[in-house]
Image (cartoon, rainbow, N blue to C red; front, top):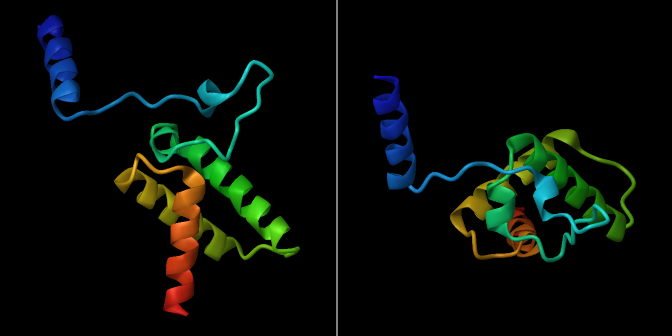
Length: 111
């Protein structure tokens, strides 16, 4: 009975295209660094939620630093990270920085 359950669960996972989540550290080089400009949406969407959120906040800080902003609007940052992750799940072939660019442009259109 247990074997049947395991086989059924595995079959359903493969049939739906489900993939196991992987730690963000899987994308790090030998020294532990992740090239954030090369990270793909598929990689971001395929990692654990807390890793995706962590990286999203890092990107937010990076972009705010480039813009010489020294403050964070927590609700807006969280929503932005969420939008990037949603966009990445729908567009796995894009790079994360392209998804961020898309989300930022959409935000500007709404204002």
